[in-house]
Amino acid sequence: MNSKSLSDEQLVTLFIETQKNLYFEHLYDRYADKVYRKCMSFVKDEAKAEDFTHDIFMKLVLNISTYKATAKFSTWLYSITYNYCIDQVRLSKKYVEYPLDYDFDLVEDDDSEFAELEEQRLRKALQQIVPEEKSILLMKYQDELSIKEIASTLAISESAVKMRLLRAKERLKKVYIESALFWGIIITKMLSVLFTNND
Image 1 (cartoon, rainbow, N blue to C red):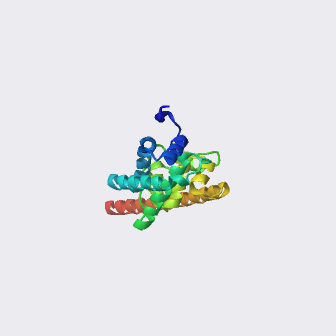
Image 2 (image 1 turned 120 degrees about the vertical axis):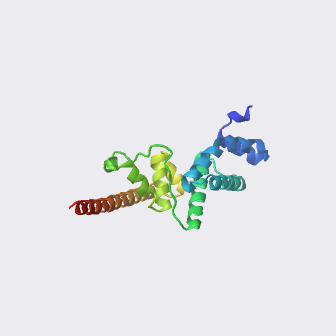
Image 3 (image 1 turned 90 degrees about the vertical axis):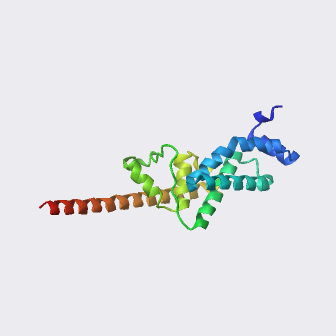
């Protein structure tokens, strides 16, 4: 059997049973770039993202025997990646930018108010909320994980996920509005000074 055609879960089982590096290498090949890009979204630094990726796969090797096939391997690895990155952000004692790799769509049936948020200001607002709030928003709206998958990733209930998403969206909207008001005041003052000087 061609080992490359095996599922993630089959590769994990075979690696645990045989300890042959070949099986783990296939998993690495499948996910290293995805893990790296996710780390980059947290640190925006290629060297740090590479270090994070290396550390995450080291954690994966050390903890792979704890993997349970009741969850998708990709979801389990996603959880390790997010938790590691958030821990590192906490240790750095500063919040970092989450660059958006592609369209960040906050519009759902109950999210119509976000349709009117101006993209650039939304990006700036994302930089100002805490890592945990950013993470759950990015999981839902950028990575398009389901509520069930987020719950599995964060090891919390689905109702807790919904509550955290609601709070994060409210916080993001508040920061966005405050930012808009701030720049509105600045522009008004600049215009006032300009017209005063012209008199």
